[in-house]
Figure 1: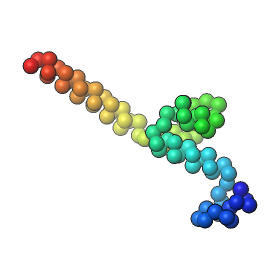
Figure 2: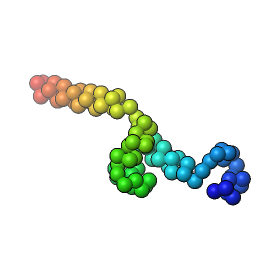
Figure 3: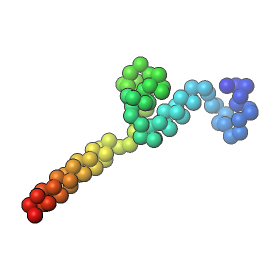
Figure 4: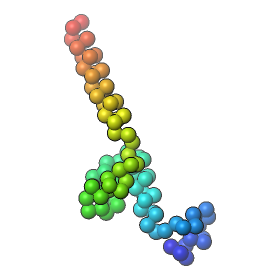
Length: 86
């Protein structure tokens, strides 16, 4: 990595080989990939817990996702009740 660093334009001064894994993790998580199937496997972590302990803060806000999911289910149910009453 030390030999390659000067040959790569705009690479941060303190960039390390380990930083490539962190970059990969942030790309995978940002793309919405599943922690167990993809992220843990690609990062070669022994468990999804390791991945979540290290990168859990990068996943979207779970509270907002949960609220949106519940809202979608309730809206679909309300629509279903309205159409069956008609």
